Length: 145
Image (cartoon, rainbow, N blue to C red; front, top):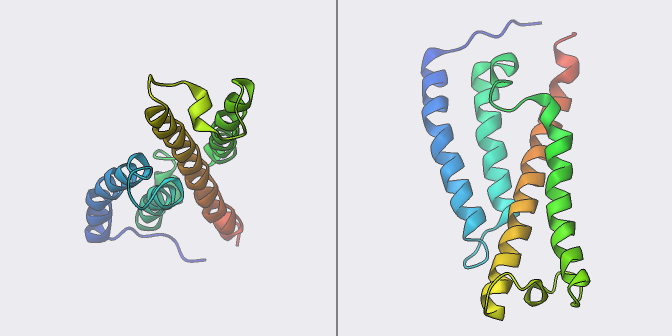
């Protein structure tokens, strides 16, 4: 097996670009209910930024940014946020994912907007955690070879 040698230029560029990718991903998530984009696209961008650092720095160093043990709990939390938003609407007298029933604001349109935002955050969190976990699981056996 080849040992990982970090290229200083690749390492520097990936560490400089990664925060900007994550900021754009947060923009995509938080504006997904107004414009194209949303949780899946933003979650994929965050996962891509994390994986970029893992590719350039090596998996052991990148564990400081997003630990392997966070994948399942954060993925589950994202699904729970999504499902909890829909279930809260049912408990408040609406249908599943009927955001107007959530009464998060004075107007039904703003309540819908906040409900969609909660769902987008949940989806983004779940997609990020699952994609990084898939990457980690694919490389799990490589360290032993």
